[in-house]
Image 1: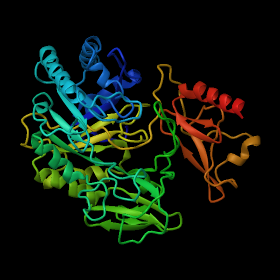
Image 2: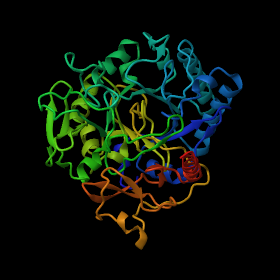
Image 3: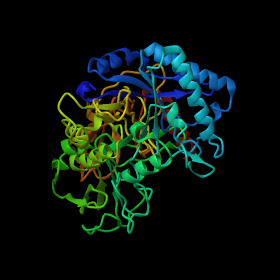
Image 4: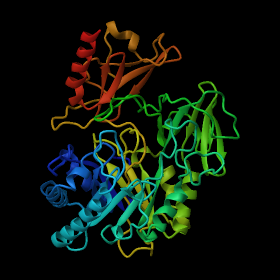
Length: 514
């Protein structure tokens, strides 16, 4: 976060604080909050705590039904605002009335009305404790909250207690579909796209259900997703059959640990900064061979194809970001939000997002952002994602709202997520570990004969560094900051240092089983 220009943002959401069964909240990075909030507020942005996320929403439904846990959660949110000198709370509930992560508790009939009742009480509690100057924001999916198996037709009552709803308008398509398709389409192709969801349809769905446009913020993804196709793609059609095996994404991608699903595979995620600094894109609109860049006129997004590896990659660039931001302005929205701050490259995407209908001027328009704290999980929707910081762009001088323009971001995206850290985190290093003479075969650049094999440079989990055998050579890579590389069976996982004993025990169990 040291390279983030916080003067370009209005609000930052620190993610994530996780609800416990009794309604208390767990936030593992308390030690860093003073520095983080000081840094953010020094740039003029407000700071919120994001509660929940993809792996932290499993208990909301249960808590909202139990008086003691519900009361405790209300008190915990107030306490967090006081303790960290926050400007509000962002709730990333994935999802009311429908299944999010595989182990989530949900109630199709009662989750949404119970959530509304909770928000009403939270607003009353905030106003009583702090006056009317604390924010409540929500991260929401591309359709309104579900009731009895379908989206609500009227969510206007929610807007009475919530300052902004931030639409996670990304991860619309991915490896979970039969065909390739755009990660975050502006519009969907009625003839070709089997997922009839988009940036435009999400805005329409929420406003049609009674949510005021001036309290709505539309989401942008600062990343893309790679999938592998059956055949070499025709370059005039981004909807073609694909495999469900997820390929390796950028240098931060790796197998990850989900407390519901366990140890999973790669995410296929490519952050914008790595599309640029790993040489996939030599310019924002120019791909390096063997990749070829195409533009789809319906989804209004670029896509890449690598014929050598049959890799399809859908993402957003400055052109597509600007189109979405300007459209949000034309619809009278409060602004746009992004996932995530740390994924940008030299402010290329943030500056495009700040166009917002041409209202942006340097130092005037600001972007509101949701920031993930050091060593915490991402918020995502269906799979999970690499560690990131989410953000939103809002015009600070916009007349669409009488309150400060704000948006939070939480990710509806399937991106890989990491297990939650314990309180006793160990220090880690992302620098390559020194290899012993007995382990020289793992040194970056050394020859290897098992393409696709991951190997930690330190078998004891003291470093984030690992190598991937690619094209007969060991290629250096690193787990996300705050995590370490842990050997697991014949591969690796990137996880918190506290996972060492769990992974070691699992390895022993598999060894005994063999």
